[in-house]
Amino acid sequence: MNKFLILLLLGITLSYGFTLPESKKKCANTVIEKLIACRFKKAFAQIDSMSNHAPDDPLGPFLHMYGIGLQDLDLDRRTDSAGFLQSYNKTLKLISEMEQKKDTTSYSKTLRGFTKATYSAYCLRNKEYGAGVHVGLEAIRDLKEAKEMDPDNSDADLYLGLYDYAKGELRKQLWWVLFWFPGSKEEGIKQLENASDNSQISSLGADLVLVDIYITEKMYGKSWKLIRSLETNYPTSRYILWSKAKYFHMQEQYSKAAQVYRRLCELYSSIPNAGRSVLSGKSKQAHMLFLDKKYDESMQVCREILKEADSWDDPRVQEIRKDAEKLIRDIKKNDKS
Image (cartoon, rainbow, N blue to C red; front, side, top):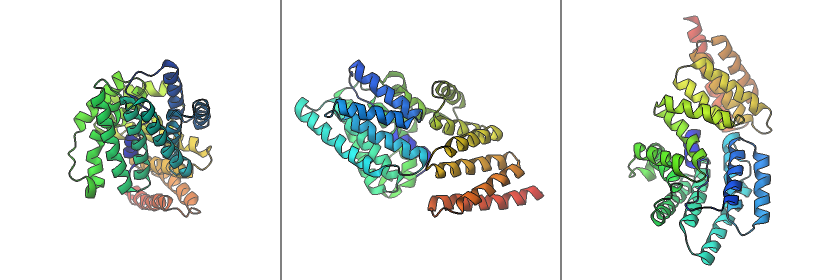
């Protein structure tokens, strides 16, 4: 599954579907902002504090599993599978206990839906397609019921919109289980824009997803406006840099795209266990330099990839290595012409 699709399914947000106490809303927003800014240590420290202060509240363990999912995406590897699964089970358990004490609400349905959606994205990313699709469909049912219980629940529109937009891509990749689902990109975008405009604390997540959707749908003016705004507010976010590089690529501004990918490589180089992301960034950079006809620079990056990948016994890294070898052949062919 490609990174963009997983990003869509993960959603990069948190939603509720009813009015939260201001203190809890502020705390959740602070955690989410730290996660989006890739300040994972500080985010997890705050999550631990939340859980210690309110051990019966499912919000803490949900944010924990959600943060692990985002960190996995950022580093392109599993960072804490045991912690993720433990937090997933604990979140569902606490939601059920909350419903037994206070009845089922649009909030509990929304939180359960987002918990399952996050788990679904985790499974799909790790190629556990059967489990991912099964739990993902359960998440959709939960969120539709949350919306029925509270028609003003704009937060539920986030994942429902993500699903409506992404299921066409899902259907292509998982045709054996989703061939019968219709796709509706237009409706998905409308739902996401509603979440961006009207939700309590999920507007940031909706904006981040909409950036990539606008690029994919060639709505470049809308995309660039969002990129500039998000980059100003979250200058340390690597998620935004990936989107910015994609924007320049689609606009055929290959030199600028290569510069952003180089910056991403520099950032990942200082992070332990981020080798996959470094090589992914270098691969993208090499391709942008090639498209910009800077063959010598592209060749240099390819050789760096081969040197670094040589010691890796990792299927994903070996895919990047083979792609670099092919690109070297293309460079030699085009450089002679």
